[in-house]
Image (cartoon, rainbow, N blue to C red; front, top):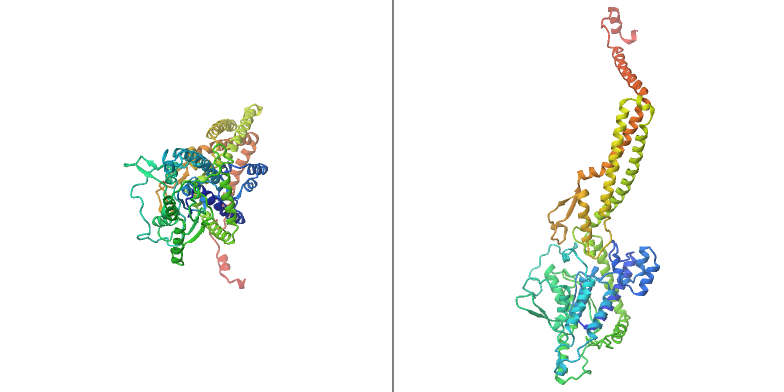
Length: 610
């Protein structure tokens, strides 16, 4: 599980630290010759679409070698955080990071780029009049409509098109407590109603509606309209403990294995030196700051870790944070230059980047990151050897691996069939030409009648082979080649290819749902069997061509060697007849059976008296 605290623009600190963690993961993966986190499955090329100038030039210089192209990319681009964390949770802008890394399955460089752009558009344009400070204008500092447009834009560009617009859960085999049934799990029920069908941007809008900064988001589809706001108040500003309880409520106690919590280096006290604050306002801000302190949850988790050490409910816990490190407000963006994305917020971004670099130089921090990376890599590599990994890594639907394998075999079959039909067309045309030319021979008028019969049959079969081959070539050309490349629409393209080729060669066998394979499905496993009628149909051209050649050779043999064949048949019959009767009459037991008395006495005498 991965968790991110809320912190506004300080979320960049979280992303920079996570970027360093992914670089450590990349080093350990490359040591095992895994060039990307999709291994052993192929790397989807669309992930290398938004490259900076340096990466683009390196990729261009790499040429056509796929491995060189991969190595030309930054290491943190080739390894996705969603492949190492089953759950990614966050509060406020931490929730925004969780959506981008988890649901949108973005790489760290892409997430940082989108985060900077969102901060520039949202925090770079505060309202001029704010009621809470001057008593006039809007009550909220930032325009929620601007935030909504930004979220919709990011989701529209980055969202994967999944089959049925859903992500199916994938369960991996586990050895610890697989049959345990939790009783009264230590979790709280926060929603007693059915799950609501919210769009991704709506979830992001509700999760980031910080008080006094954005207008609460009103969900109108409920019976009574509910106003949703940022939940980062109290312990929810660090959602690690709440999420841990939620996950154990879903999967049972002891189901959490590794917890990675990344903070935002929030200051220990609010900066009240800026603006017009009264004593009451300063006191209120100080109390609110203490109530939203994420380190309270961190200390509670450390106590929980010590209590469960060595038990079945123990877990590995890593916290990466520097409390008090950044005295930056959640909406600080200096300088504010709405028309210059490059320079807008450059001072704030530099302060965060410099502090992260200083924080990562600490020996204890490096050790924590290395230990965490080793555990995450070990678990990913262990999972990659299971048959569920493809669906988890690529968000494929259906039986893991079966669709890709079937597409691979269909593509190979189509290529071989194309070559075979082209050969049949040429070979059958040659045989037909040979038969037609043979009819002009003078000796054909005196030939045995079987010669003409065989040659006419050969000509007919050759023509049928040519016509069937042409028809099947046209069918394969119209159907096109199955697309074996990953596309934005997930595995729906593969399913379309399978459904297109199924009637030609395969029949689908409906299989009932089986929970024994450990997968959470709502659809049956798809299996196929050969269609024997279609197999016979596809083999007709090669059969007709083969029979045509045999009949032509048989007719030619009769024409050339009919005398020798007649002699051989007659001689064979005479030989068989004579052999049978000669053997019968030379048999020792064949005779009259009468012997003389003297011959009988000699036969009865002992051998020594002879």
